[in-house]
Length: 274
Image 1: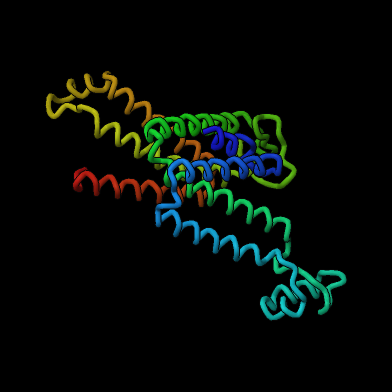
Image 2: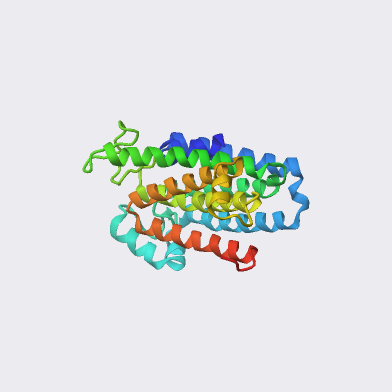
């Protein structure tokens, strides 16, 4: 949870001082997860490892210095770009396929670190209490959503500031702790379906009145089970409102698709009942 909170609250980890510790923490947690559960014995973990290794290798090729004539054969478009804009570029020189090798190297490190985290988490989830983890993510999401809503209400439309004081050098449209509103909506598209499914799980497990009319439902609503369900449902509502306030069309579309997918799973598990 500290790793998740760091990645979100440190301006979405878009700066080197934020994303390098995030990568290191993700890799360390992933390695621990594999070691603690002996994940190398699981053929599915090995298959995922090979897949991530192939992706990282394909990305790494782009930052290897190659002769210009080989670049022209592998990627004629890159060769034309370098001939027009790169000073000193000639057939005998060495260059990379990537237009920005430093940025590509960061992406390779990101894939390796988050790949390790996925491999470790896929096994370590067996020893983590899912309800605890979900409630912690929900609490973080409510905090992030509240920051965005307050910022939207009190901030200046032409000069939005992150946390009320941070002005990003790069152009963008900040929302909440994120420099880019689309990043905020994308994070909510991941967290919101989890919270909605948690609310449904609480409703399904609670002792709801089979009959008795509105009075019986009122008694259930004031019970512990009813209050827990209402609390999680309210959290989902706050997160939805914050997502809409971003005015991110791609983000809202992603949330809609994710919620429809969750609804399909719920209907499937419920036997098709409304």
